[in-house]
Each structure stands twice: as C-alpha cells, then as structure tokens.
Image 1 (cartoon, one colour):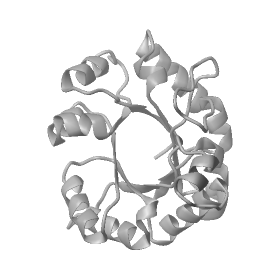
Image 2: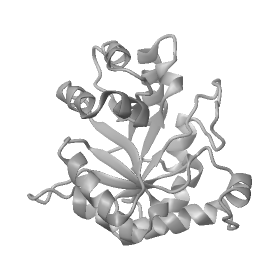
Image 3: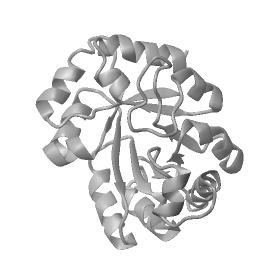
Length: 232
C-alpha cells in the first residue's frame, strides 16, 4: 500500500455519509469510519461503503482486556475492512491478542495499527492528567516500539513523529497520521498539526483528513488538493 489520503467520514448518519460520498463521481477515496458513524449505523454502514468500492479504515481504537479485544477483532475481521486499530496503552499482550483475533482461518487479515498518543494530547495533559512524566516524543516511540515487536503493522501518530517512528521501527512500519490541516485552514481542537505537504516531507505513509475536506465548500476539490500536496 503506497501513500494515500484517508478521508474521515465524521458524520452521524448513513444519509449524510452517502450524500457526501455521492459527490465523488471519479474517485473512490480511502475512507475512515470512526466511532460516531459506526455507533450510529452499525456494521451495515461498513458493508455498504465497502460495496461501493472504497478502502476502509475502521477506527474504533479497541482497548480492553486481551480476551475481549481478541473476540471483538474476530467479529471485525468479518467486515472485510483494510485497516483497524487499538490503543497501544492496552499493552503488548492486548495487541498480540488483537492480531490473533483479527487473523482469519485462511491466514489473511486487515492491517492492524496502534494509537500511540492522541493528537489532542499535549505534554501538559500527559503529565498533569495521565501522570506520565516522560516527554511525549519518548512515550510515542516506546509505544510504537512495543507495537512493532508484537507484530503490528504500524501506528497512528502525529506527522511530526512519523520520521522518528520509521527510524526506530523501520521504513515498512506504517505511520498513519491525523492532525493534518491546509496551511490556510483552522486547526480546530488538534494540538500537534501540520500540512499535507509537510506530512509527506516528514515521512507519513497515510494522512487522515476530516473537516478540511468534509466541511469544505467543495469537498472533491479539497480532496484533490490534499492528494496533490501529499501524494503528488
């Protein structure tokens, strides 16, 4: 899988989601289905979008005891998505269980990545609320390394951390990076952000872009601009 732009389908209903996707008459964007849409519409929305020909990142960030995560991943693997994730904070044992649950009887499975630290988290929050006193960059690297050791395919991280993750875990270890905004756009509630062009320069393999595309006056044009800046 080469570099790509993943469009975050941050909608609360099937109707809004399909109306948005209907605007794309030439492209079939790689899309992300997150908690809001999945919890609103259930697995059927995943099947419907898959049937339309889109690659899917199912972004549910599982984090529970290993056995629960293993069983949940077995259920998700039946949905035929391309990419799923867990929280690395769930430990190596949980990530290993996730891999086991995700792997189908024929040996195939979606790619599995781990969230290191959310892009809405900064150093102050890390220390005062999570009681993690290490620098955030070190925490991200440590979580990424554990994910790599247990056999995951990559991590969700900030674009600002993508290069360092590749240095630590290898160039084939995927970096999927939210927190991307156009240079002339609003950063919203993200703390650690950069542009599509800068994310490419920093080594991101995939960028996840939501509001700059979904809330644009012309979403298709915004998507194409993103692809042009990131993929080239």
